[in-house]
Amino acid sequence: MRIDQLDGLVAFRAVAQSRSFTAAAAQLEVSPQAISQAIKALEARLSVRLFNRTTRSVALTEAGERLWARVGPALDDVMEGTESVRELAEKPTGLLRISLPRLAFASLLQPHLGCFHERYPDIHLELCFDDSFVDIVERGLDAGIRLGDSVARDMVSLPLSRHELVVIVASPSYLKRRGTPKKVADLARHDCIRFRFPSSDAIFRWELIDAGRPVEVEVAGPVTVNDPAAMVGCALEGLGLAYVLESTARELLVAGRLKSVLAASCPTLPGLHIYFPSRRQLPMKLRCFVDFWRELRLQTPPGTPS
Image (cartoon, one colour):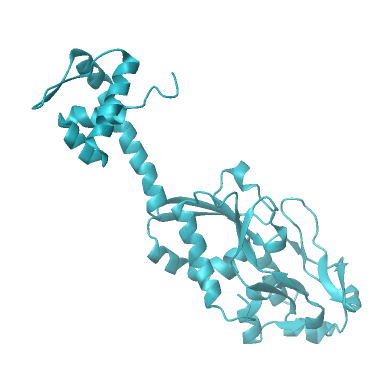
């Protein structure tokens, strides 16, 4: 099959249906001359005449009838298929698959998912939780959400939240029993809730600021988990100190059920970013998702955790 072999079939379909070059031109929003030239080029390639034309009527020839009988239904399927694909570009609908860490769901998505669904009821979200960086192209995903400094450079990356504050938290009962650490070195004498990355099996080393310099601290403690929410839960039960994003423990801090320690040693991290392979012909469903959460970001006052 040559690359131009299907040229003219759309014009042929329109004329065969309406039995009129003028009506076909109006349907396809082109001139009658353009329809005539397309049919002539198709007839030339096939070496047959497809229509008998007079000033008053248009009729299919035997060759035209045979071609219409074979390709007419197929052309209908093609046209319906292209229209259904075009809907994806023009209407926010379909399945949107996104990779994200659990902390992003709890702090960013969960509070606003109901509002998003109300605005875009035809977008079906599939949220794939993974705390490691994911190759979304290999996995067949539409996008991923991660902290900004962990997004691969070959991805388009857009911020969804302003920044993320790190806090070290503990229950009042733990601090009463073990005391409050005053400097980074004091962590060696405390129980700490450790985090193990599910993908690499590595234990996270706490990233802190000591005397103005960034340091990584290997901590020890009675419990190791692979879920940020579990770290907060363990701290709440008095099992030790937990290194978490402020957004995951905010309500408990406000309520006084957890206390923050070593605030001056805790860093501020780049906000959560959404990443995807290309801006070119971005699917409407993904564009709506990005715009919705970036709109929320703009509504958050500068300097406020989001």
